[in-house]
Length: 532
Image (cartoon, rainbow, N blue to C red; front, side, top):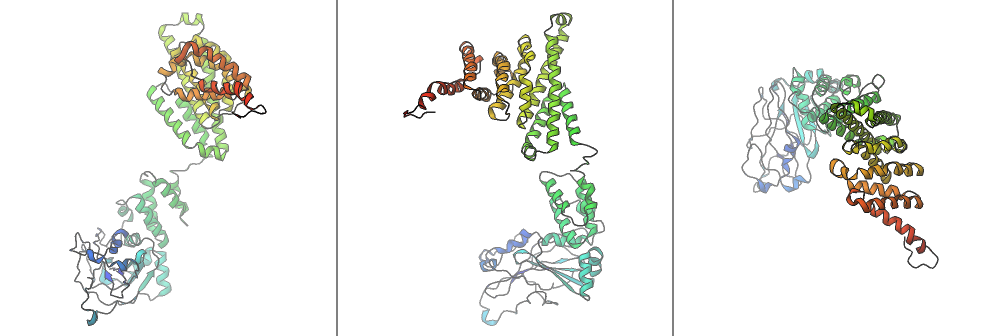
């Protein structure tokens, strides 16, 4: 049995709030939630007929200052039934003065004042007529709950209660001040009366079991701790539950070895299963796939996962991240070697003459797949700001660029996408190659990019014209002024002939113009414009 009272500033007797509570199949009461207990903060002028077992709250003054007081239950119940509101029930004086004693009855002088009705709740365990221990919990918001229990049950299951009972023997009451979670504390004590704690936990959810686990550890309730760990190890975790579970488990004091099976869900033995080997295997599977949908979706997923941990990996600069970059470069070189071999094969007249149309189609499909692989790897490395060496490798592919115009544009255009992505990386500062590498990258791959530009705008899903043009222009502007002039004048001749079939680099052209024709004069002594 348990009651809680809320003190009043005017010195009047405290009100006792009655909240409906459920009965579990094991035959004990479940304490109401904290939210239900705190409904006592309503004003008395809102009192009315109770609805659904809920009653109005005390006066506004009582919500400012609350003092818990405990009174005894009117009668013991051997078989609990669902509690109902009973505002006319009388309260007997407490057998043990646990908190402040019940206030005296109303003096005749105050009889004219409207007295608040008294209500109560009860929490009991097992056969209440054989109980020999009271446990009083002092929670938040002035709530006090009294539990009627049995010494032998609590001492058998809880090292906390066993210690308190042995130190205070004979003892009839144990007080627990500053109880953080009254509701779960009561439920955890109730689990000591259950024959199968795990079966009881099946009805709960992960957040509630974590709360029970925390209380069970504070009580030294080992059977409950093990049942909670078994539950958490078997149940799926959704959303933020994983972080909460792992955090809670790692805070256990003396049960770490028991939590090992549970933590294996999120940790592995890196010595026997190096993460980099697994990563290399995943990348290899994706690169070798020829099924369009699975290949496309897994590339998108892996790319997204790489982007999610970019900040962590690059900031830590760990050896694992360096190993990952090495793996990506190795895969890129393998794909590049394969693509170059396919280009050579596709441009040899003797080989083409001997092949059937199906063989040619298969060869061109392989070219498209390898070019798509290169684009995917370039995207990953650029996002990780690890494409410096990649620009060097790509700028040195003069043979590949020379063979490029001999391949049908519908099969070769993804190669130009790789060039565009690396030029965007340089233009955004994601890669910082040397001046010579930047110039060579433009010399080798800008012309093939312009040849395929019209197709890229209409036949490539990912292609963003604005981003590419800005990246190419910014890359050009990182060169010395003489190199800027050479590249932009070559572009201008192409743009005047092709129009929309050529990258629009007018913004870069304007910057170069000002640097060449305006800035030198603006910086001369006596210039008033100071224009940059």
